[in-house]
Image 1 (spheres, rainbow, N blue to C red):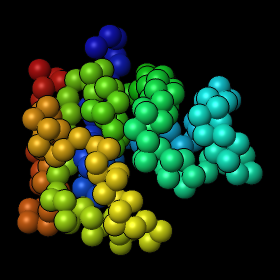
Image 2 (cartoon, one colour):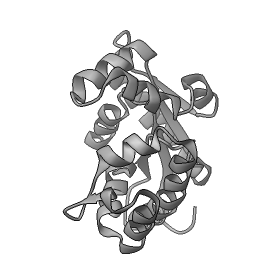
Image 3 (tube, rainbow, N blue to C red):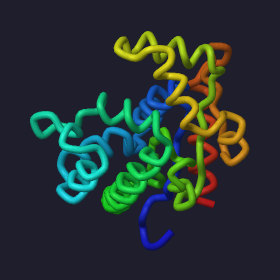
Length: 202
C-alpha cells in the first residue's frame, strides 16, 4: 500500500450466493463498497469508447434508446464463449480503472470491491484479500428465480456455468462466508471485519 490508500479487499460469490446482502452489512460498519457490476452497467451506458466496442461486437441492437440492451447482450454472450470473452476484455479494464480512481478517494482502512466475476476477470490479482460468499447451487437457483422473474432456470444454469465453481473460488479466498440459512451471517461478517482491521493495523 502506498501512502494512505486503503487496503483493497474483494467480495464475490456465485449468482444467488448473496454477496450483495453481505456487502450491505459491511457498509453498515462504515466500509465503502464498490459495486463492480452496477458500475460496469453505468460505464457501458456512459463511456463512449466502451459503447463503441460493444456495438462493434453485438451490433446496433446492443443499445435501445441509448441504454444498454442487457437482454440482447446476455442472450448472445452466454451462448457464445468467445463473444463473452471479448465482452469481458472490453468491460473489465474499464471497471478496473474506475475502481482504482474510486479507491484512491476513500479514507477508510480498507474498501470492498464487490464483483461476481472477481476471479474470472483476473481482477482478484490486484487485491490484498478475497471474501467468498457461498451457498449450495439449489438454494442459489431458487433465490435467483424468485428475484429475477424474467429469467428461466436454463438462463441461470448458463450464468452459473460461466462462473467458477464454488470450491475453486473458496480455495483462492482468504475468508469464506456461508450464506445457506444454516449459519447467521452477521457474526461471520463481524469476525472478518475485526481480522481485516487487525491485519491492516498490524
